[in-house]
Image (cartoon, rainbow, N blue to C red):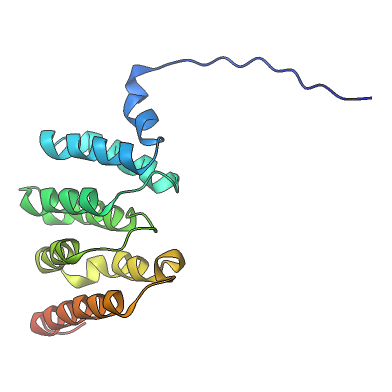
Length: 162
């Protein structure tokens, strides 16, 4: 006595959600859409990408996409406070299988200088607390992280403390 499950699915394609569907393909697709965001400076498109990145583990930013998006925000003429949530979401959207490189660390330091450390504290902590990112790392990565932490600390001290 086998039970058979029969279902009919209706799939509807809505071109308004093409970006979201593309981003569901994974990091490579997110990188492609992120490139479009940077090229067009389209903040509405960025919001749509961030919504997918926040909700799906396999659809995250690679190091280059993260860096390019942060650089775009650093060059933006928008109100700094309106950029804070975007900075945080982008930093938190870095794939847990990716380790920041020197250029990304430098870009994040630029964000700390522009915005201030207090506004970015939670996302920076999340960047280092990722369990997956902590596994199987060598001394070089540890030292690079410490160099970054010391640079941020120096900026905090110059800014007047925590």
